[in-house]
Image 1 (cartoon, rainbow, N blue to C red):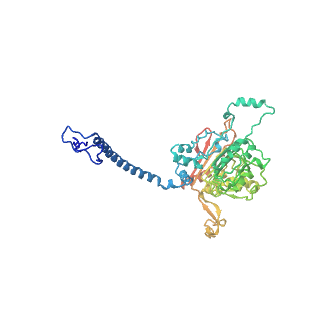
Image 2 (cartoon, rainbow, N blue to C red):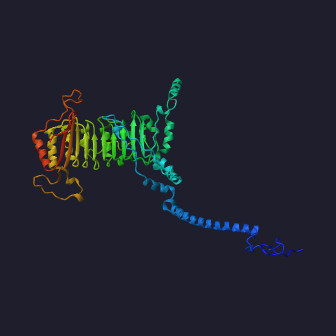
Image 3 (cartoon, rainbow, N blue to C red):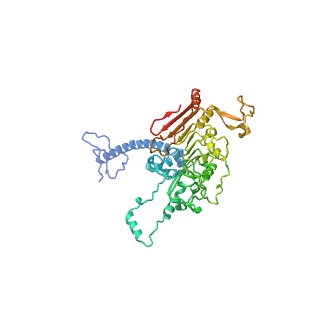
Length: 496
């Protein structure tokens, strides 16, 4: 029997189980004591959750839009759409330029005060790789960030050195040290080396062979030097490297197979005269030259070298601004060298007075005095343990007034003014006079009364009063001429 009694809550008649009322909800209760049915209460709760979810979803959509804008701005940058190889080249130009301190002979030659070697900065690539994944990817793909590697092979770096030494000594015959595997491990990575520092024996140079296309600085120090064969030199395969900075310590220039045409900075402890002239002849861009000693004995070179013979007796280095020759044999080099742009000259030697007749012997000595006339841009000259004669100061006074330093005939016609008339003073106008405006001369010596003086009696001769007056007149004419004497035990005192 069908129940026609309506529901006291929803007023629906009949069986509720069979009623198809899927979209209806309970009406508002007629009495306060009447509550919605459990189903309606559950639906109301779900609807409230849906409303909250819709608000949350709308907020998430807004946040997603904001995040997408940031993401697009980040990813749409040109630098992030380029290949990592291209980005790496841009990356290195944005880094602070902190190159390792350049090598210098003063750190190793033992002459004078030995200064402590500056600390090398840490590899910047390791720090950049720790920033993020993208930076790590770029850092690892940038070879220029990994061009400095220091490998020190010594007894202190080998564990259990005493035990190994005793074991090797007990073998018959003793086991010899074989460095070949070490060099074999280094050679495949030389193509990314920018600065190469080698301290070894000459017999191991042949083991260091690979292509070094980006090599810019080379420091070579040999414990011993033998020149019996071509294999004892440092020869790289492939394209001959063209470093701009080379320093040789106890090694001749023939020990290095490089292209000298790009060289701008050179230092060496010793070279023969032929090696010096050959190097200067093949280095037209040289700006800095520091040579400790010049020997008269020739060093054998490889027969296959096409530039092993000096072909130019007069070498002009237009860019050379610093010349340091700390050797008493410097007068061997001066007759062959012309440096019109020279600004700093440090040398050792005696300045003799000019002879009445210029022959093959006296001409070489006089070239030392004529360095002022051959280097019109010279502003500083240091004489250490040398004897300065009056002729030098007379030449200095003449140079300050105006000394001819080149001929118009030696200049291409496009630069010639075509002035062939005589000057008012009777001199040939083919000479161009350049008055000296700034000159500094520092003379150092040991007092004669000192018992520990290495060269007793090496004091400058007294300058004539007439010469001093000439120089003072030039000072009054606003010529910046400073001539100071620096004895070992007394402060500097100007000759003027």
